[in-house]
Amino acid sequence: MKIILHPEQLKLTIQRLAHQLTENEIDFTRTVFIGIQPRGIKFADRIIECIRQLYPREKVQYGKLDITFYRDDVRREIHIANQTTIDFSVEGKTVILIDDVLYTGRTIRSALDALLDFGRPEKVALCTLIDRRFSRELPIQPDYCGWTIDSIVTQRVTVQWEQEQVILH
Amino acid sequence: MGTGAGDLALTSAGTKQNRINDFGITIFKLALHLKMQLSTKHLLGIRALTRQDIELILSTAEQFKDVLQRPVKKVPSLRDVTIVNLFYENSTRTRISFELAEKRLSADTINFTASGSSVSKGETLLDTVNNILSMKVDMVVMRHSASGAPHFLSRHISAAIVNAGDGINEHPTQGLLDALSMKQALGTLEGIRVAIIGDIMHSRVAMSNIYLLKKMGAEVMVAGPPTLIPPYIQEAFGVKVEYNIKNALQWCDVANVLRIQLERQSQPLFSSLREYNLVYGVTRKLLDGLSKEIVIMHPGPINRGVELDSDVADSGHSLILQQVENGVAVRMAVLYLLAGKN
Image (cartoon, rainbow over all chains, first blue to last red; front, side, top):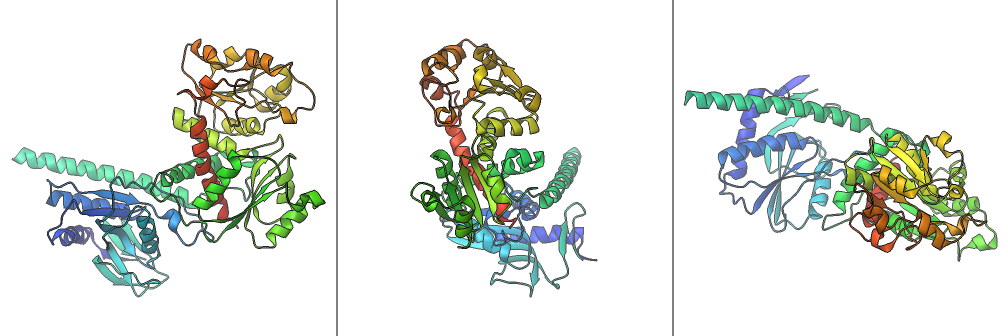
């Protein structure tokens, strides 16, 4: 087991991403944030908290997307659905999808399908905390990335929010 | 200034603690969820389900209900699954509801009705089903006038079977959608009082409702004319029996009124429909005379002016159209949860 991110690093990374996401004169009426259920939500909550501190006067639109019914492996395994709460329109907006670990890219593929059922965004960008490169099964890359790591299939990356650290095991 | 910073530190520590607690609960739920699956391969009846199964189906149905509120009401979950709807008996709601649920899940569907098929040429049930299954069909939704027909089929074929009503035995998806409607109206099933009123003897809806409500901790009463209530029902199922409709309505939180099934009655069990309406019909006057508000349900089709008066069926107390709406979500949940078990 190896610690990839210590609590202090994790905090700084989240702050850095919050700054990166907003550095190009972001228009909060045209940009919305969507965390992916269930594990992406913890990370998205932290990013949004940080952005709200940076822009206390702006209304930051933040939703949660569950992709269970859009998965491509129903026959192999049944997953239990979580709540989807998107109480704003995504039509014509810039959508920032937020997830904790980008691995095969299949979750993001499902998320794109699910998102398009809510409307036609002008642009979709992806923000992830960890990018496990060289393990992608689909042509999907993050636009905002906390850390890029090398790992093999038998390894697992876990974000432990209670200890505020990221481990590889 | 100093106190301000202290307050801030205190609040942030507080939220952090909450966050950790919340997270612990989420992980616990997640671990519970990941292992959760239906305990059965087919949905033959509520009798074979566990309480966990029922809770899983209802919570999944609530997620599907959300999906049905979206601009695009369709999800691709079952796009590689083919489902046959085998209807050996007439149906409006159930068939349309199943078909819609299948389409909303992106499954391919085939419809079979006994009239106009080779059943009239003498083909047996098992032959018909095996022929359909050899065309690579994954699931069978089936309604039959013989009690136990889907159970018989489940011993001979490997495809998943969903019972859409068999004779006077069970109608499990109706029981589930009734439960979802009650849960939404009253907030819980635990401890609620449900009166099932009317033709209990010939009703598969009553059976599924009784099994389900007892498993979920609700109190159940059956009410109606003595000729339409099986004599053993109190001992067998632990339900209350009442022959006076007014008493039943006064006792319950929910009245589930059933249809008089004249087509299943080989001998007359009450004098006339008019007399039935006068003594056992649920009327506006009866409801106005109660000291509390109750909700009214009916599985359809309604014989207006017999078991239920029009002004009750169309009133604000009636959940009838919510039941139909919930039907699609519940059937989506059942099909989705069974599809992964092949």
